[in-house]
Image 1 (cartoon, rainbow, N blue to C red):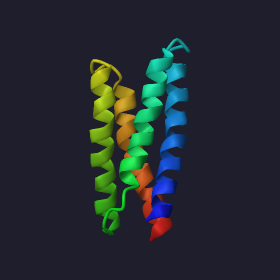
Image 2: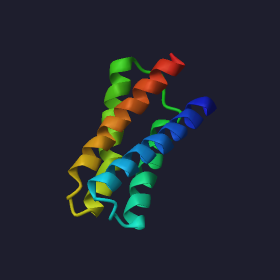
Image 3: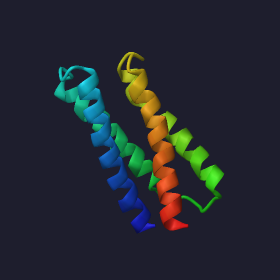
Image 4: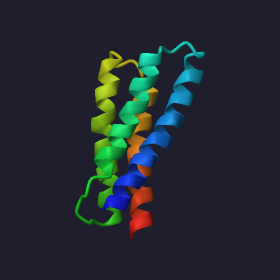
Amino acid sequence: MKRRMIESLLGGVLLGLVCVIGASIRSGFTASPVFVFSLWYNRVVLGLLIGAPWAKIDRSKALLRGVLFGLLVSFAFYSSTGFADHISFLAGIVYGVILEAWLYRRNA
């Protein structure tokens, strides 16, 4: 389980960087440092949650868990933007699935 946590956190950090780059480009590089950090941190928290020592389940349930955690964690950031950053919200759901799929494949 320690390996799962490390891999998931690293995945959250990397996906957070992808998200930050995308948000910066979408904003014309005018996004505030607080906004950018909050978005990155949200993805790290997603990695932390997904990397927790969950019971082994089949692939479809793991992907559904990724959707659920991506939705729940990203909703916190989405609500802090006044429900304005739809793309980051949807990306968080997709990132939850990506992390779960990657971890399931690596640890199967």
